[in-house]
Length: 174
Image (cartoon, rainbow, N blue to C red; front, side, top):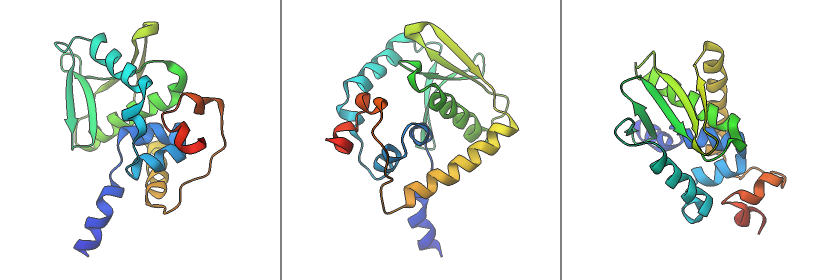
């Protein structure tokens, strides 16, 4: 029994990036969760990382790694989890990634935290609040994410305009 649980642990753990990818492209989620991580070779991802590093001084936000799974920016003075994104092109995925951080931290006993989605280029801020309805949606989403991660076959998807900016495009459609 213990050995069986050990095998399932990597698949049981869900990260914020996986929640994001689930809403953007389930094929991308499957590839990412199976160790194929094309982001390392993406100029767009590098630009986002630079924007993240340069937009907010580290004095206010503290980057934290939680359970080796979630990398969050936390403002201790306001109890706010920040998620910084390059553009609002995938806003729903960004919002749910932030919801997931709040949900995960609530599961660790940290309640009352706020979420803030920051788009520095457009100087836009969106505040998010975790509700029981969102929690129920996340639980369903997590079950689907786990099923995709455990699947031996990669989901089929159709080519869409958003694929052109994806770091996985060449792998999927090359």
